[in-house]
Length: 396
Image (cartoon, rainbow, N blue to C red):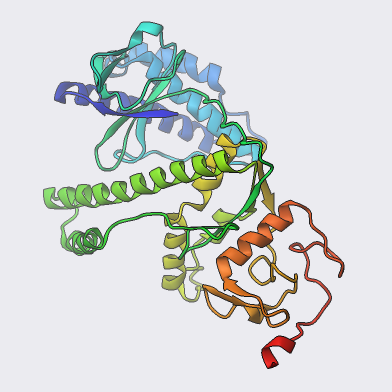
């Protein structure tokens, strides 16, 4: 998706809010229909039947008929795709949409004249029932776009994203490979020794965020003051997301251009970031610490980095088993849990190799991508070798 900042007028903003409300209403009706389905009952209506029901509803209710039929039908199309992904086991079950969260709608059947450029930095797009809406022309719009999606984030910003599949970045052809170890303190450590950290909020922004959160806790629910504070918090959080996304885009592009093969760990991030609060009968332990770790993992952009790498360097990203990558010595292949003295220090008690722990793990990931096998049985990363550490050098 090629995303651009939308710049609607106040009247256009109200019309766009109406489109979002219609899309949300149609989506929630579809969710309600599927919640009544149980095994053994008649199947819930599909996309075609729901479109026929939508036609009847538009004929009966004037406020729904005043909206765009494209927006409402595409909301049903999005729901049908969400249900298909749920039964395929790749996504969760579609749930209710709330006002002010994840607002947006999609427009299809876009013609060539529906997007045009006005000046160097200004363009406009034609939205049904709204008219021509301006957006910031930050880069050329992809040619031949057939659909676009308009979204509104929690900070109140509007964006238009044109659906286009970009061409993958060609491989450099040097035959070089790199291993990438993802962490919390160091967001991405490369086997070349380079350490990369995803940017976030500055210290002044963090202090302001803490003050706003305390102010939000004291604000009365439903008050105008609480609304203003929530909007200010959302603006700071959107700033952090924008910086992280910019870092992910630049880092993934750089890796795809420099290396033929990029090796990463096959991490189950959803499982790793689950809450540890437990239940009333079996409450969890260290819940606050686990919540802080989850926030740090998500703020490092682990999943976004690999997703963009797989899109830019197609068929050149290798996922390896993450077992023992942090405990194995990249020099001799010995696995020793005590070799990692701290978060940043790795010191092998067998061969004496010492270096950055994250870089050592990245080198093991690179070796695993090449299917290297040691002379002492088994792959270097998937299983430990059958040999005890030899602390000869450390005793010397």
